Image 1 (cartoon, helix red, strand yellow):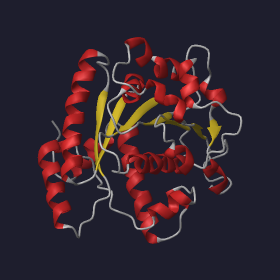
Image 2 (image 1 turned 180 degrees about the vertical axis):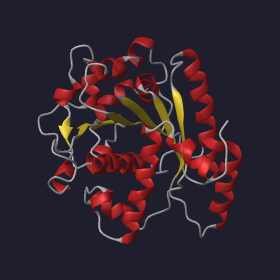
Image 3 (image 1 turned 90 degrees about the vertical axis):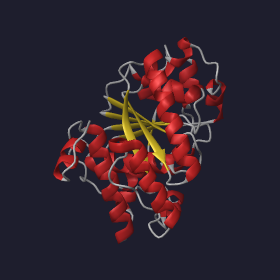
Image 4 (image 1 turned 90 degrees about the horizontal axis):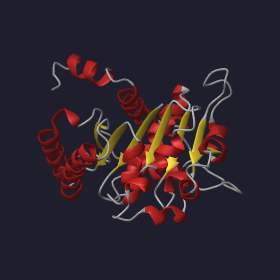
Length: 280
């Protein structure tokens, strides 16, 4: 089971949008997936069409991590009704959500101890249903993000090509290095996704080149462009792979490629080699 935290230090860069794009790609690929919505605002849960009803939110699952069962408490994404019958194989699609809520905010503090940092890892360690777990983190380095990192194999950082976002991503990479040294030696950096790129903007073109210079091969390909109808797709609680139009198909292709890079350790190296580049 691959556990990937999607993180940023700055709000508004489309971190949750990237989480949802990857979830859509996983659904289209037939990859059994769990999305853990650790952000107390629970935007990913809303965008994934969750109707929690009498379910148990992730905050309360974390509080009772030793006894709780995330597989039993997770709810199916509303996206499943959008997928054509038989599109993901005979077993049917699996896209579950450990839905978010304000209660998880009790753990989003800077002084979280080691025992609390292990709560999500304990919770996820009791399930074998999923091939992929995507953790949507709050836009901070407080307790919930560090809890997610403790439970993860990889951290994917999301940045917009803008001054403050690029600076925040550089700080996040440094913080990740320190965290790995102290708490999670096996944790790896999946890379940095440049999101909401507007090629018509001279400032964004400049910042994208700055990101290439600063982050080197940690900057993932493809760059994800700004999509005009993204808000409409999210508001309708639709997977981007099922949304009509050329722009949505192109966006879906970008997320397919990013997902392959996350789940296939050799995939990105092969793409760079085909482009005549080398990795360190």
